[in-house]
Amino acid sequence: MSSENITANLRLTLRVWRQPGAQAPGRFVEYALAAVSPDSSFLEMMDQLNEQLIAKGEVPVEFDHDCREGICGMCSMTINGVPHGPERGTTTCQLHMRHFKDGETITIEPWRARPFPVIRDLVVDRTAFDRIIQAGGFISARTGSAPDANEIPVPKQTADYAMDAAACIGCGACVAACKNGAAMLFVAAKASHLNSLPQGKAEKDRRVLAMVRTMDSEGFGNCTNFAECSAVCPKQITLDHIAHLNRDYLVASVKNFLSKVE
Image (cartoon, rainbow, N blue to C red):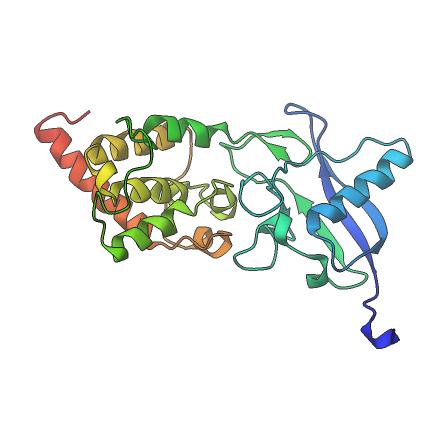
């Protein structure tokens, strides 16, 4: 094989946030890592670092992961100041090391937001999102088995819009990127996904009021339309859904003032 076809391995310096517990102070610790394949994913590189630490008898770096296919939303690292790293529309687990340079220093830290407290190292507590979903991210009616595809006609434009919103994996990158720590893009995606479809319209007003109220009570900040959330979203959810949420919330608030809908 020609040497021109062989991609050289990378030598990296990693500045990793280490925090032994939720109440303990944290700090950045530097590690040197050699022989990193450019074809490996970012999480595989972190595995390599942990193998190196374990071999030395040191405590490995804790980080969230699960499917490693960009679906589950578990991976949550801020890489060089950007949630999920430098590639648009890409989760941390789908980010490959070929996007970094030999000799580069990479800073890795957890999501930074008050509603996402650090548990240990790069792991944060995102149960605030779970409570928002419990407040209204569902349809109460029993749907039974899958209905016939043509039983409830849904215009293709509406179906596509709902599917775009449903692509949200709930990773929390939108919150980590927002200077206000707002969760509007997450809530908007989860609400407009259901509010757009016939099955979800019956509970639209109650859903929006409950989800927004829970979002506020969890300590998330206000949206100021800077669009950092959409820029780092690995599923590229657009701000259109925030506009949809604002419109639905306004209508539901007026209805709730005139006659209780909750």
